[in-house]
Length: 370
Image (cartoon, rainbow, N blue to C red):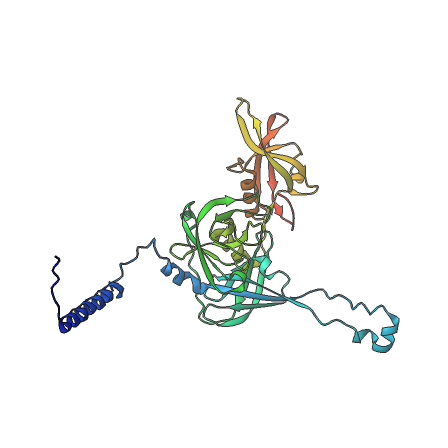
């Protein structure tokens, strides 16, 4: 026989009430959050300070331009011209708007952006991060590097800090700041995937920083900054199959952009040296048999500096002054950086033997070669 202790109703009620209280207390213990002081983040876990330093210098750029007007289809109909006249059948003026980004480079309001952002624009409007806006004046453009300089008349603008170019390394964390798709200022993060990218067919002069920080339409002309918020490049282009970011973005390094800006401010244009040749990179055997790197002259521009100095198609240039020509792109960049009128000693190989010539550089015409 099983014995069961009798339990009075008041005792049972008390037990139930007691259990209920315990359950409620247990529930409170389980659901109430535990509040602790947050652990401090290390520099590698947040880039808020870098963004706070750089973002005020990044602006949104809005442009408007007039597009070609199509004639009204009834203009050629004499019947309608009789009643309305050609003036009454004119189509309304058409305007097209576009957007991009820019970077405030100086305290007096000079803004660096891409040439393609403001190309053919009739109106340019700058919008600051704090909501202030103003029309911008076009100072100058350099299509060969896809850069343009604007000036905005707004007091108290904050220029961006520049990073020394030698500090940019493959693997460094970088932040892209701009106005993608017109949604407003946006920050994306990635790393430097490569430096010195060229041969992409984007510009005449290419020396890009490659990054996987998301760059989308509207980011053009915006800032690529390092983990300290210092400018390392001007975002320019992306590789994309669908119009969106695919992890291949390209930025013009700050030293190149700053040099172009300085030239535009001083002269209103970028003046480059010109040799007057077309060439491609080759390797030719030396006297000892080891290959020598150089550039093969495939064409000499008639009346150009090289022609006047006696250079011939078929010559292989191996030296320009104290520069050994091991890279054709580097050689042409070196020439472009020199001023017209500068004499340059050219050394190389002609018909299997050495030759030397003194070329006085000319001024590089638009859309010219080396």
